[in-house]
Image (tube, rainbow over all chains, first blue to last red; front, side):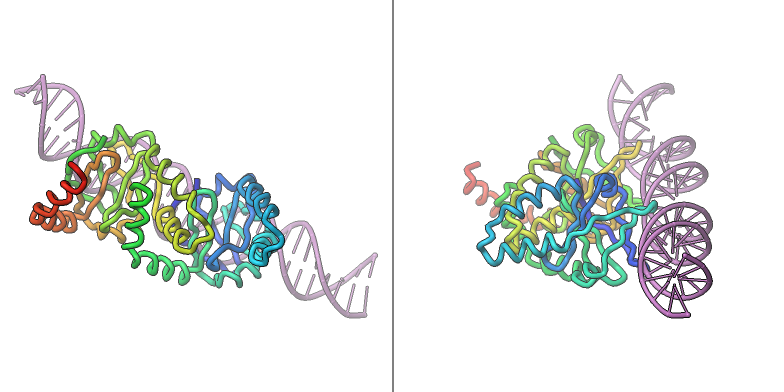
Length: 143
Length: 143
DNA sequence: ATGAAAGTGGGTAATTGTGGGGAAAAGTAA
DNA sequence: TTACTTTTCCCCACAATTACCCACTTTCAT
């Protein structure tokens, strides 16, 4: 179970650390791919396989599901950790998500998301501001 | 079951004690997360899992539920108690809830809320003054 | 009054984040 | 092929942070 928000820097070699708590769930294998809202998704191997099965089951006839499947599958790479718990982010994924020097690793239960500093901070701000909607959502869920 | 209002100080290392009565219900695992009205929520593991299941069931395809889920899960961290019964409050949650040196821990049946001294005292004042309205609400709810 | 429990502060060892060096691999040209 | 350059990747090292443990003081109950 991934939770929380962590800040890391990406060095000149393109390496980025992930939180130790996340590593234990990913050490048996992980996949990085393009995500929604210009971030990257990182899945553990098991979660990835579940997702991949769902993806290939999507109706080929629909243009937007075709596009979604291509986004996720074609962008996928498997991830290796070095001894310090860092991963190497492929160039095309860095470009896709506007990653430069600073990044956030965000735990979302069954996946990890990687965001550029700027993108995440503005996204969070935008969401927090609509706190009325947030309260509404929470009421719906019975919190 | 959490009840009552307790006052504690947060030390330089960001540690805050919780009432011994609360600890026994949280020692098997606790999650701290963003709450409403700029306070923090602390849930026992079981309560949290109920909530988390509802969250991950929300549709990934919808932009605003994506945002809500991200806010809730990224804002959550699991909490460990040290031998003295203190928890470490993550920096970004301290910022979110304006926590500095003094704080209240408040029991609300199935969750604990953590408020900054100032925020809680002014909130309480405001609420107590408008107790007429509160009574009105209660009648609406059939209490 | 005395013992136990709770609140708060601090010290030390372990872990983590991050930079860099060097070996192995891959590529290139004679 | 061979010699040389370039790139990738693995491992080491250091500084800073964190986690863990201990100790003191105060409060409360018997």
